[in-house]
Length: 294
Image 1 (tube, one colour):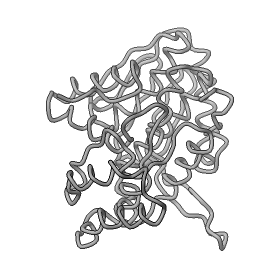
Image 2 (cartoon, rainbow, N blue to C red):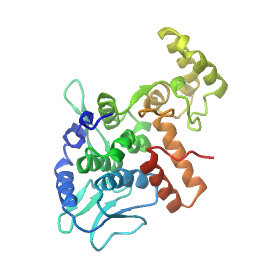
Image 3 (spheres, helix red, strand yellow):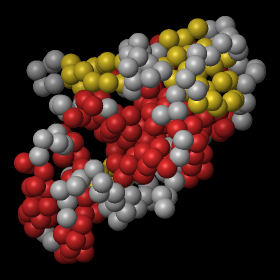
Image 4 (cartoon, rainbow, N blue to C red):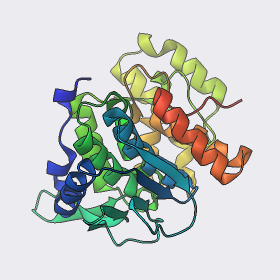
């Protein structure tokens, strides 16, 4: 993936309502002399939101500090990631540069009859847009690009109806070559803890003969594998389609984004929240992937 193939997120439809605010913020932080404080709750969403901004600041060589605490920042310049329940959208104060990122409900896609379909623009997605605008040629920023839709994957919108913002952002990633879409049997290293209806041996058997199957054979095998989910209350149809047919894989990944997110979430079961949050961000900045769990 090359920088010139990355589409400008702030020029895309899902960001149209927040782009003016985020563009002002990017200009302000580029001209900032002192260190920027990055602050978020020690949660999975908090870590996934801080990581891309930190990647951009590292790529630019700009000073910053990272802090995972449940507090409101006070002095100096800062970027504060608000919790998922605070759906205020982004708010920016210029002197000194101070930005609060909150979830926003935006138009994701326009339906065939012209009606806009709304979905969540998460703090993770907003953070990736800021990172790209700060450091469009940044190596770390490009490496983290597939995580753009991780906030939407974790959001409950996919459990009720389909999420048009998730779809729009995923299409951007596919079009620019940042990710490819694969079926479940095509993923070499997969986490099955969120698909308990899948028999591991059956998946292995299908995966081993996948290349030898024609299109009809693949469709039949995958439908058979996913059929037990139809009698369950979860996952939703939208999420089931993503888990079976639309696995999102980054460049040279042997795993997919849903599996990477599950591995990241395990950190919070192994360590204190602050330790887990720091561990995930450190791993993302170093490799672009979740830490390999024991």
